[in-house]
Length: 342
Image (tube, rainbow, N blue to C red):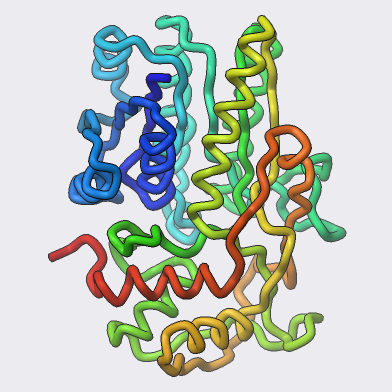
């Protein structure tokens, strides 16, 4: 297939590019490089020994998007492009609604105009808000506790309305839990522009000497060690989930049908912050200094998935455990202490 990937130069996007190219697909990447660098895609080409066609463009630019769809026969779209920092979304909500929601509306309009009806959307477990029970299933009520989460939820609702209006569309909504790790080659990985928003890259930067210590938000949660528990998934497993979704939607198309599929992508296993620190120390041989500070507003004690529906519908299941996640994250950070920056 010929697959258009928005935000393909990002963390999850680059790993998905590798999986798609190695599976024999052709890809076209659209990225405005606001949170990524072109060198990431050069590394994808190096890993796969295949070329990547790249357009530097914003998906909100309808003229550029129209030109791209006119210039190529596109079979499917994987939509990663979007801002993703929770804290920033609270401070700059308009920026998030304009980019994430409006950008998706422009993309959908151009897909509709071009007759491209297969889409895989990068959603998030944040759409579950504060779940009352665990593990989290796709049938749970949805809500959001911040503007970033609301943009994901709004887009999911837009896609649902889109499908109700034309049920010949094939739409896969993938709700990620916590992506970590890096490609086995150590060539691509997570490279935050500024202070990392997520646990693993922060720990990695401490291990490589870029930061002094970790602040653990909350040591008094009702969990075995008092720290928050999350469902961490290896980014390669996540990337393979997109390939599984595309394959599933292609089968739906062959049957002459449409589909709106929503699945969790997680391991179903929760690890606490302290467990993650210990696992990373073991993988890296480095000590990770930390201090426990007050809880952050809006954080919950535990969050982990039930991902059995993804296996049932797409034949997907995670292959990598915590040791691999930490080992590969460290391999990437050690080889690239400043990420993609020289």
